[in-house]
Image (cartoon, rainbow over all chains, first blue to last red; front, side, top):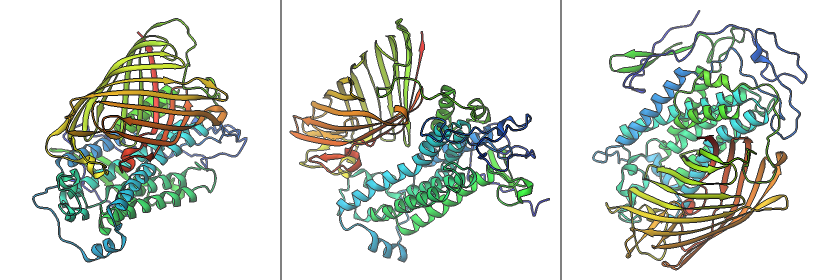
Length: 333
Length: 284
């Protein structure tokens, strides 16, 4: 049935102090579904056994319920209590690692050649412009995270297409992917304690009493949280658009390109503002994209057998496993 | 349905915890729905036409990326119209804790509040006096965190004029606990100020632009005067309000600084909202 079987004990990644172990992925369902998640105008009613597949054509006007409704396929895995537990563990990990913080006594201060070259090329010439770059990276991060949840899930899916069920699912999956990214990023901060590029200017260009020089934020360079979260948000939203006609048929390209463009800009601005090195940004982009693609495909958007196996197929399962010290996460591939 | 939806969404998005399939199922969907109820082009509410005054408890929760601002009220009257009571909202962030409590009188289109706000900063200190401040300067930390109490009064007017309404917010702040030889950065007003007095006036016009009045655009200007520091700050920009469901509104503010003695970047403007506001009330 499957090509292989691997049970990965990712206990180090998601450590928890207790709780009931629940399956994060329910037993696969094999029921047939509509071939598309958006039915044609005037589609007949679905069979009585699958009332969830009923699709309501919209008026086309810009009003609540004006768009054709969206349907969450029966074969897809809904955000469940198990996913909530996983998200909670990830957020707990993030908060705990953030509170502990990096070790300023033994920071990573050595420099990598490619980072120095990129810093020389990209860093803004003066403090004024570095501050502007920092401001715009903050705004970009806010937009990158808010857009999928606020606009696509709430306004477009829930309001315009009057499909709050789908809107809620996509929003919760967004939060799940971002939470996992934050957990990984904060643990990397903790483990690496890399000094930010501006750290070497504390006492010269920067007032040594500035919070950024005094606090442990100075040693949170690796890897970039702004970049990883922006890329995770872009990736998970792109996956939603490839699976659901949120913007209509063949409407996935623009939100995918736009999301990654914003994320890439955020990453570049983190170097321009002297808050990160190139390797911090590239690592953040890689991990954020990976998590943003893997979480929805592995945990939620499953393929029917007819669609073939692979990521998202029914052959994949992820489980929470109770251990003497807490909970681990295992998977079957 | 909207109440259930936002309850689920708030739990899932803010507490980011255990919203599950049961929550997803209660929201339903797929069938047609009536257009948003309520008057077009006017501020949120009144949505309960019941004129009988009664005791009530209500909340307004603002949720967005990196912020959660709950506000609780207990009052007498109609929570969506005329009422008198008390407001309270906690403040917890990565850099400070505190809260606000005060009296509130709502008599549409007039809304008056008066109360006190206490701020306990974890790491930011009062600021040494300078002519101008940059974003890094307001994160000054000399090991002695800033703590102060601000007494606030604010009068909001929102009379309907034409297709929309005029928005006027006038406030006065009196700060105590700030040393005479130091300034303080107030996150509430987003300026570096000398104690004790600060005056603020926001004026604008909010009008419906689409979706049968559910989507509104506001154009606003704002002026702040700190007579003790002898500085003026001017901001201007737009507000967006999108009433999605009866109890849920998407909100966005983009009001950058146009004129200021300081260069605080986004810390000096009103970018503090890109999220949703959920309102709820229950009779006591």
